[in-house]
Length: 494
Picture 1 (cartoon, rainbow, N blue to C red):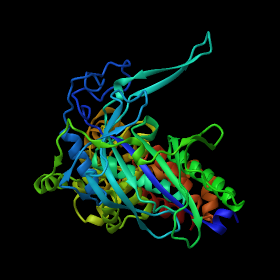
Picture 2: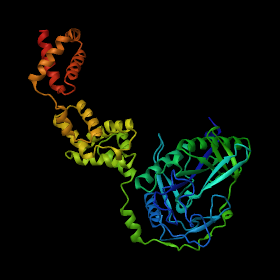
Picture 3: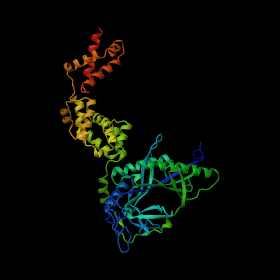
Picture 4: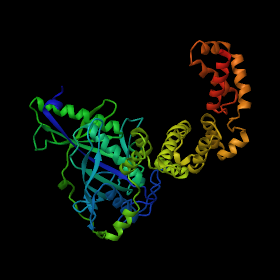
């Protein structure tokens, strides 16, 4: 066993920065749709930090942070304010960042986590506060002189940014990854952010320390930056966990510092000594009024909250779905909304409709989306039309096999199921007279499987049924075919 497992307890707290999907920036009217735009084209005097301009609070961003706080079980402060966070860095156009220090919008929340093999538990959330994003630094090297230099793209500067600060309640890299996955899911469900780490609109810093098992005193924490995927967060924490355990086991001390994760070498490297809050010289932002959020405003935001992932999962399990079915459907809000609409359109017995809808959504729908690299919001087959197709199968109008082909045609043509079935002549064949001739041809053309069946090999009948289904292009009623085939084979065997 490692020193981590035998001697030390790991303590992890996460700080997550989330860009909001507002159309304009936090304190000006510049567009946030700068992805792919030429550098420094989505800018104005406010986000450029020019003298004599005044910021104006984006109301939608405040709605989004309140919605986030409510979804994370936070208390919403009726009074909060903005502050100036001062530090000299080229990506800060004003020389300070407008943020929140001692009076954030949201405090004292929690998020339920659960790693495999362990019981679910709550991880605390200290606060959720509002700030603005910085500009983007682009580091370059002159190919002729080899001299390093940096360029600044101000397009990102001023984009609404939430910081979600977790309590030091996480005890393993696996818990940290689970926390991030569930947090991203909540943010996407409520529609406040795309929350994509690879695109930089969901960024995480991790604080990690070790202490002897049973100790109530925290060890010296190290902050880790530069992680752009859930895997990177997990691997960086595992590396740092082992590094610190090795130092402590050898009688050394941990330096409080900021370290960066290097993907190529799978290690953390020292970047700088860790700053404290007083290093930033916070003071109240004089150009912005305090935020006063009425109870009516907070309740109006609460009323717009959708059903959250945990509640949805519980409801789907209550419909008789398996853990896999329920969790896969509930994973994304758009998928779950589509599924619910299919169930509603099917009507009838709810548990049966729930199972039928799950079979199709997790089967043909996901297969088509994966094959075509599309999102469910782009699927041409509406929930109502999918329910109509499922209804045709239930009524015996088409077989399950044919229905899959019908779905494919519906997705590519935009036609309804009845229209595809009628135009393609795909209705199920159930008539004994029509099928009997096809069954007899299959028996005549395949003497060996017939002999195998008559020798006691029941499985040989499946091959013969397959021949009938092949000739009818899947339209034959399998139950009728089976009965006719058995009767003919048994009669031949007499």
